[in-house]
Image 1 (cartoon, rainbow, N blue to C red):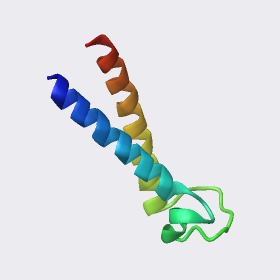
Image 2 (spheres, one colour):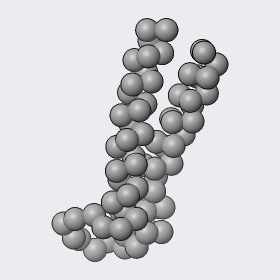
Image 3 (cartoon, one colour):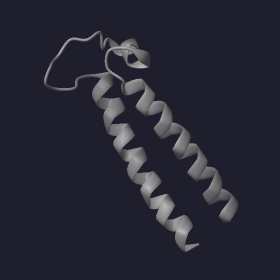
Image 4 (spheres, one colour):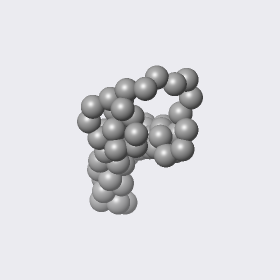
Length: 71
C-alpha cells in the first residue's frame, strides 16, 4: 500500500509541476497555447482545461499529503 501511495504521490507532483509550467503567460511554455501577451478576462480552450486539471491535481496532491501523513 505504501509503495502505491508513494508512486502516486510522485506522479501527481510531477503532473502539478508540468501543468504549472504550461500555464505561464507571456514567456515560457505557456506561449505554446498562444499566450503571447494579450490581455483578456477569461480562459478559453486548452488554457481553461489545463487550469482546471491543475486545480484537480493540486487538490489530489493535498489529499495524498494528508493520507501519507496518517499512514
